[in-house]
Amino acid sequence: MGLQPSAIRYYEQIGLLPPTLRINGQRSYDATVFHRLALVQRAQRLGFTLGEIRQLFFGFRQGMPASQRWRKLSRRKLDELDIQLRDIKAMQRRLREMIRKCRCETFDQCGKGIFSNECAKNSTGRARTSHKMKTAKLVDASGPRRSLLRISRARLVSHEDKVRRGPQRGR
Image 1 (cartoon, rainbow, N blue to C red):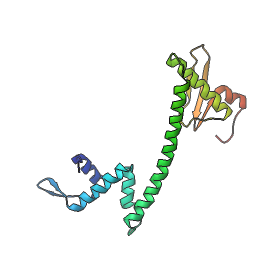
Image 2: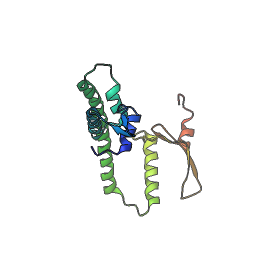
Image 3: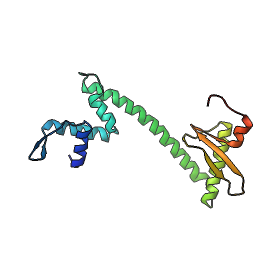
Image 4: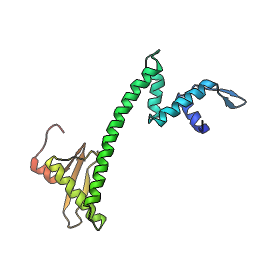
């Protein structure tokens, strides 16, 4: 099977494998453990997490056939993979665009362009970031002007924009 003993012990610890008999301090496994390990390895190769594999074995009503369990979890995994595929395609588009458009000489120049572009897009509402971050102070390298930014939930808002718009309710 090619598994490390520590992995097998961990699978026992989290309940994917039943506790084993010990003979003279060594674990003794029957064939069903090897079958279960084959299922675990196949599920991992298909992208399932150990939590999802645990759900496969124990997260359904008693007596539900394995095929129905596999189908239900597989549909969920396919939905996740569709989302990941869309994200990958979007990243590929951004990388291709960067290859075509980037003419920066330094990383400072590059970062300033990215920062300015993202702020402009977010203040017009055309594009949004998806990062959750805390408040950060940024200093513009071209002068002493400081801009307090609040980056939250999927929106980048400069302090100046917030002051211009006034207080917003429900945030």
